[in-house]
Image 1 (cartoon, rainbow over the protein chains, first blue to last red):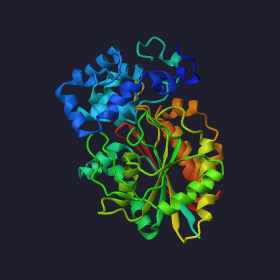
Image 2 (cartoon, chains in turn orange, green):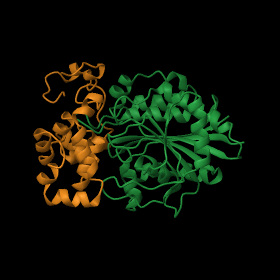
Image 3 (cartoon, rainbow over the protein chains, first blue to last red):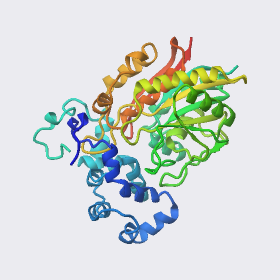
Image 4 (cartoon, chains in turn green, orange):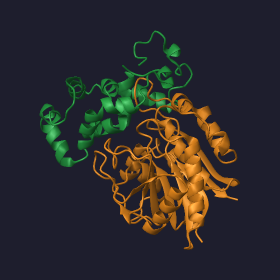
Length: 135
Length: 279
């Protein structure tokens, strides 16, 4: 049961608060392990076996294997920890951000060049009424 | 006596570091951004500090979820560039000023800011990208750097008010240091950006520009900005801007804006940069 917070009203956004940090502890610590070249090699050689070293939930493991970034965030992942995972994949923040918005990387990059996503229409849950990914 | 003569603020986007490290700064995408730092490069050559107190945030590099200090002061002689998942940036080791750092720690703790003293810490792009933007690619950094890492990864970061007042305590600490040193304080991070979720890519140019307008002449109008406003208006990662208020608090009430630059985008982020000189 999640406590309500004022920031829950921001659409498409998961604030990495104490509750999310607790939920995602082992997922994030797995990502942290990827900061060593040896661990990166072991992970790439057998991802599923490597994930067993961490006390993560099956849901978290599946989200990692499927590179489902929004799911990892929902399960307590933090973007700066997840950065170790997409860096291991040779991907960038922009690639991953595009994935999370459901846009192609090219369309996302174009949106950024045009000034980014406007706050207009993106401030509150009511702004996103009817969208499936209001999160 | 030591004194603080100026402050510098800048975003610390990792892609900027990658552009520098891979010699891509001349590309059309990056040209306008690097042009915005030409003034700083020239100015600092003529106004070189002995020490920079560099306020930044660690991005799950030195600190994992095991220990999360709200304010951590680097008191070591040196700090190595961190391996953030793609190998350490090819930049010089950062040389600290252990003696001044120890003095600051002692002074601000007695001033009721209970910061964490860190004697071993690798420093990530949050600290090294600002150095690269201003100093380019030297074989060694031209001055000493005291890292001040602020938690903005796990919510909540410290409030803007707390940051501003810590800056004031740092100013007092530096002014009570007996050695003759020229000190700058840098605040890094921001501006508006959101790196996660379906709302990723948020940029709020009017909000950023209002922040840039006010931080020099009227910082007190910013220190009560709520965390909710940062998250909603500047994006979930835009809340890094509280770190600029430590820099601002360390300066005099009266400052002069020597340089101001704003550019969208660098990867996912709005880039802001200021140099403020004490009057």
